[in-house]
Length: 139
Image (cartoon, rainbow, N blue to C red):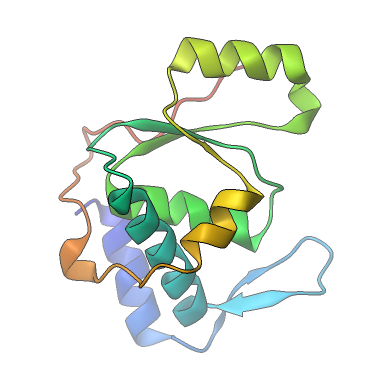
């Protein structure tokens, strides 16, 4: 398991009820325990779709707690992601999707489906290491 996920797992165990994320507007927060649960649901959803190690998905989601949960879920599943933003414009998004070969665009609809999944247990997390692809950023 990569160090980042190991440290996250240790933090969840040590401080489950501490605030992990506060949204940019300051109106919403989530604990480490809840963030772990949300991201584990995302990981389970992605694994149920048959994604393999280093497959690539695009995340087209507003930057939020949910976005962070998706990133963590992607890592737990052992796949990689490419972030998208509406500010890129549709032409650029189309290019990034085609060029990257992303197999799924994870959006709000995917989030809703993922939240129905049973959380993936830590034992089922992908056996990733520091040499695996984690993300691709287009500049």
